[in-house]
Image (cartoon, rainbow, N blue to C red; front, side):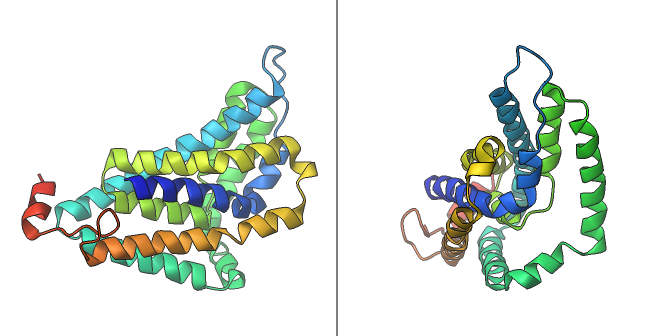
Amino acid sequence: MNIEILAALAIGFFGSFHCIGMCGPIALALPVSSKSNFSFFNGRILYNIGRIISYSLMGGLFGLIGMKFKLWGFQQSLSIILGVLILIFILIPSKYRSKLYAFGIIQKIINPLKIKISSLFKKNNPASLLLIGILNGFLPCGFVYIGLAGAMAAGGILNGILFMALFGFGTFPAMFAVSVFGKFISLNFRRKLSRLTPIFALLLAAIFILRGLNLGIPYVSPKMSSTSQMQHMH
């Protein structure tokens, strides 16, 4: 999973500058813990650990789904399909992608999460900061979905957890920085960095498609005979 590990970290890191648009206001508004022995920085670390926990849990679930496809012998087809879906998502103009979040079913997920997060802000303690991060991790985000596609293609619960944990660690630097130094990071600088995100998403899509094509390229698209596929199924 060497290539996948690099892809997970890269997508997380560069995708985080895109996700700041949705999660940034929450990160900026994080309360300072009332506990005298609990520092401002520790609270921000707890918040980010919460997000990584959520990503890892979702990664395990999607890894399990991917494992089922693997057992049914559809791993190559799944890899190609996921790659194509990522391409489609990236190529759709952003103004149309943003409309996806307006669907009723997505709003039914977002609104209760936002209400619960708002109530946790009033508690102002370490546990609430961790829970804010956990709930924040479940907020809809296109680049989290790309990460989950990677977890599914990884094929396995542990692989899915690892992929999304690394994705989460990739988001850590930017999200921690914006929660601490948000007022000093210019919007223009964040926009420039966010332009790199689609490039890494396209690379991830290419990796998925190449793996599914079974071209016999070491590490990138290793050749799998029907016999070796059966061996992987047991």
